Image (cartoon, rainbow, N blue to C red; front, side):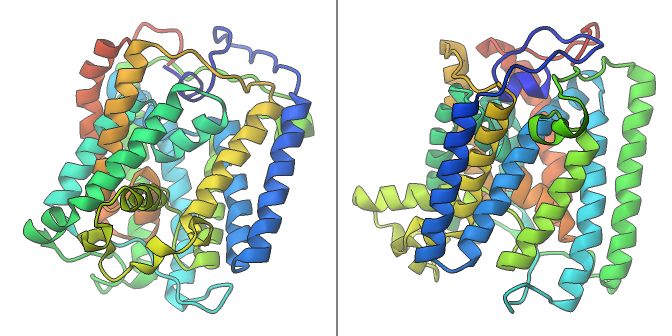
Length: 415
């Protein structure tokens, strides 16, 4: 199944020629821009200047994700099911650019507001292995990963609201169990290719690029052997209008996402992440319901965030921006509409959301915080996350049909 089918309402059957875009939904575009403007002004008036800047970066992230239908979930599924590595090669290109940008930022410690930027570098242990495997299963059942859930919500895919709700629930339960997974089970210290090896950021950058080239090469060899169907052609505008109405080439979006992640690092001193906000939202609700959230190991030493406004949370600002950006992009392409919910995709979304939320807390992040930002930060845990999420994807291929969800097949015209 194509990324488009996973993230937005179904379009006409794919052909070799890109189908024509629908007329723009001008009222929705205007509403999305107005909502963005109002929220930006509110954040500028009530929070640190970082917050409105992150909101706008989030809007650009959501706009990019939607216009390219840039998927992490679908990339893993295409490779695991039929051997199509087109999207995974785009991942490698994105990671190569991100590492190139992250290396000097982390090496020289420069940021826009005088802080000390730090990458996403996390321990390697049982929690990482189990959590990433759970996340891999969950994203294939839930219909999207963390960033995919947000931009699918922005695009109007109704069932993804269910995925998001249970993603938050799973994240909250994972936070409640964090002491067991993080402290009671064995784990090695965080390992950085740059600072744990003596290579430095220059050496780590070179090693990273070699790894990305090898992975891309392996996907090409797999395709030559399996001859998989190509990705479906997306509806697209022509000329300069394509910037605003889509669709964007995968590699163009990959470059944009890498640059925007680097801007996030420069702005808030940490890379792009998604699921920490879900945990915060769920924990606030749990506290309101009478749970003693402050005693959870996850919140040890960080209770201030629990009592502050969610608008003071940097990840929340990014997440709201992603939803708004995807909404504007979908309306600009005439693609926003709420979709049908069935018993099958509802059940899959509930299970998938819970697995992703819980798995993200165990694995120190999701496809963005652990895989994308972790690898870009030269952390070994990001690579392990990717391998285990791919393993979870292989298992999920056998589970998806139980819920009426399709799996790409070698004889498909497109995947």
